[in-house]
Length: 320
Image (cartoon, rainbow, N blue to C red; front, side, top):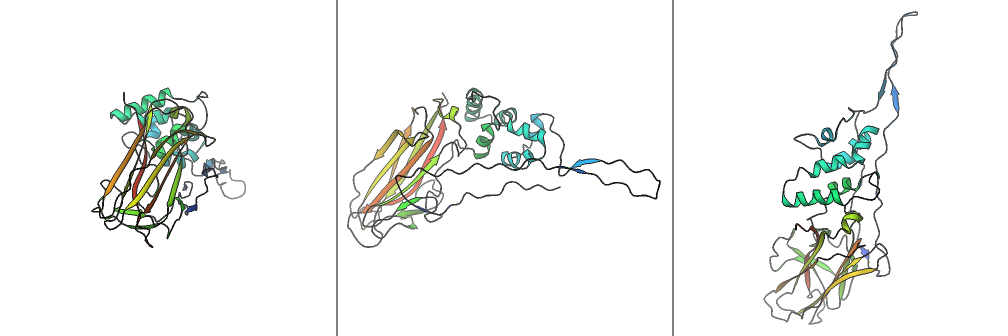
């Protein structure tokens, strides 16, 4: 038989910013359980001939896993998304294995780097009080790989304004090519503002990204934020940044704000980098709100304001 993993995309259209609304949370989905047992065919023969025994075979059934190593795949481990999608639907034995923690600890142990060893130690020490809870959060963690990657979606405007909640000022936001190369950016494009304050925002659900409460509250992680902003040579601009760490009820637990001096006109296409590290994470952080503003200083019609790009929110592990 053939199996199909759960379908779905992560794309969403741009939204209008409403500061009073809590961020939408994607509903977690799980594939259906194993299918019914299908009886095998009966033998056909002349009257009075013995009938072949009915053989029970489960549609699409594969071999029962005998150990976590079988699912890990030896030298070629199966991808976590395959384990969570297809393998989990094979039978109850596979589901129990994928929902448990032994398999995922084995997969994490394959990374022998300093970060990998630190992650394995955290995974073992930051278990939920209900250690036998199903499914184990390590499965989502291994599939989403939230440590060390940028959690901001569409950071350079390569998808237009998708993934951002936006508030247009003046002639609104547009996306243009960079006038100065931004190192490490996935795309050399940027969001450009107008003659009145333009604002955009993303709210990141850290649990949806693959982190779990005990890990977030362990005191062993840090959240690194950064943003690039600049101006075009013939127009000055202004810029603001606000990053907030929120609990499950959207209460602000910590924040960082930047209001740098405006870039003046005739600036040789200046491009600046803003960074901050939340190193002492308070217990209860579940969301990160990232928002920035920009406008020009000439008040010209069109798009001569602050140019922002390569925004990032990255979760890292303390190695010490």
